[in-house]
Amino acid sequence: MEKELKVHGSIKDNQTRCTHYHGQTDIIAIKFACCNRYYPCYKCHEESEGHPIQTWKQSDFHQKAILCGNCKTELRISEYLNCNNRCLRCSAPFNPGCSNHYHYYFQL
Image (cartoon, rainbow, N blue to C red):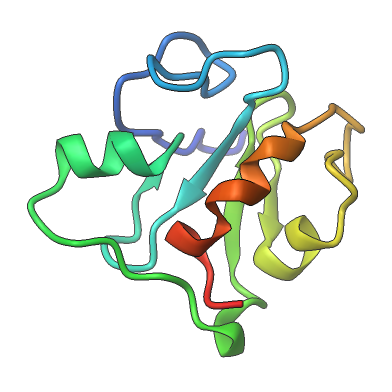
């Protein structure tokens, strides 16, 4: 049996929705490069950690750092950025508005 990954922050449900973003398609968590911990959003990270956010470098886009809250699959950053807002394993839809916050997470 696989160990379930811990998602930190102001979690509202078991699909990684948080108090900040809890719409139907807000079902991903991001592993932050600075602390190697999963959070649903940058606001949860800011509230919980005592350090600034470090973005993922393009050279690290092969790392698994995106967690689908529906099926609990970890996606590589490159897979997530090219998945057309759907999980590659279970096809659950992801919020397309997350791209507005990519600058918090990824060096593009």
